[in-house]
Length: 133
Image (cartoon, rainbow, N blue to C red; front, top):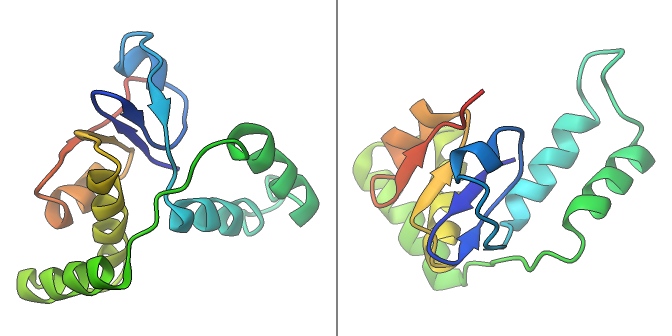
């Protein structure tokens, strides 16, 4: 899961987030793709870490059910995909660009992620930061 930190928005979850943003607790929003990706990963982890689907949903709902989701319109999605093509972004980094576009739409100024290398290449319009351990 990713975190968007900005003036008023935080996106995502993860250990180290409170340290990265100094205990500041702004509002947060989520990209539907990130929630789906978290579910997919939680239910396909290698044993013994894999969660049953019911447990994965319960975990996500307990942390994110009240969190508003930020959806891109069809035009915003196509604009982002055309930008990916112009930049030579292919494969999984395309999803990173869609997530970054959703973060920008939510008013975020920073994405906090452990996947900084991929985001740095595909999301130049927003700051990328790694949480402190």
